[in-house]
Image (cartoon, rainbow, N blue to C red; front, side):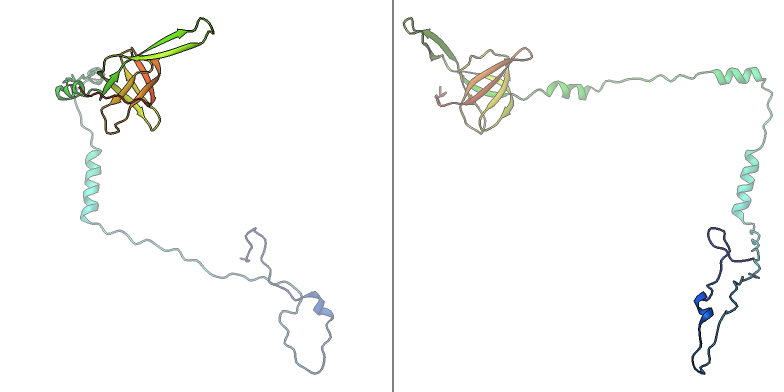
Length: 213
């Protein structure tokens, strides 16, 4: 069998350079020439491949046990049940009743968990608008009512605005003082109707009244 390349072609050994055919030898020096027949040579592979025979497996207790299991599983059990009765048994649907129990503890926790509200002092404002009959100028004056308090849901609080939700209709210009650690006064600048209530947006107030009773 000849040696072959990966592409299936016969592998050829490197031959001498054809230019060497016209080479002139100088002097009386002795040259040893290798493979100067100018023909390709093939190498015959005489190696014989021997197949390795697998040694027989020794019978052990585990192999005997596995064989006994396989044999027992292939046994046929003869019964006197007719094919119709077998179909009836297979067609039966077994229903399992599931009982649903209410988690009373969880229900109580959901009832107790309410939205946290913030206690806020309020100085309601009443803005009056007056128009000058002579020049047509509009003058707005603010009159504050009696201090009171209410509870609201705090939506967002930043350095320059404070946003809450409440179900009380509070007029613009009112002063708010949330009972929090920030200790800041806010003036209502905008309100928006939302979910049976109002979203109030307030800005820092230059008027800081006292809510001491």
